[in-house]
Length: 171
Image 1 (cartoon, rainbow, N blue to C red):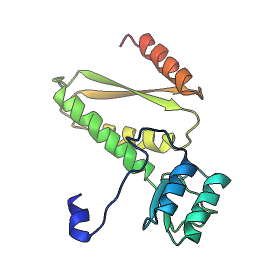
Image 2 (image 1 turned 90 degrees about the vertical axis):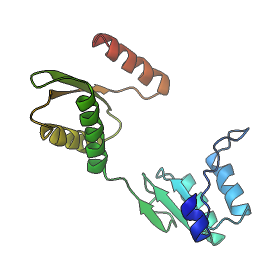
Image 3 (image 1 turned 135 degrees about the vertical axis):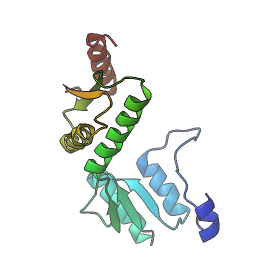
């Protein structure tokens, strides 16, 4: 907000906190009809989103995709998250929690990483977690990382799989 005030810009997350749940198409139409200066959208690689981006581009509104690209669209740029960087950030959080746990050298902190087989980038994230955790404070507790893979595709079945998984670990 402060940066926006200083540089005469405003970024709004459209669609959050609204009384109705608008589709991506409706939100794009609102943005185009409102003549916004630009659109930042999470890409999904679909033709439908490509068409929405083309419509915005035709109205002179640049579109930037994030996280997932629509590389065959008229988008102006794509911003990706570095999976290895995400993994090192997770590892830093794990190490901070381990430090604050009160456990000492010789103790073990067990970390369960739940992976979903639908996302291929998880191996890079896991590798970064393992690499950074291996370089953790040598005078602190050992960090033991265990992975479990779930194969469900719906939100409900994923929740059930995670619940069953955690029940099996007596958490």
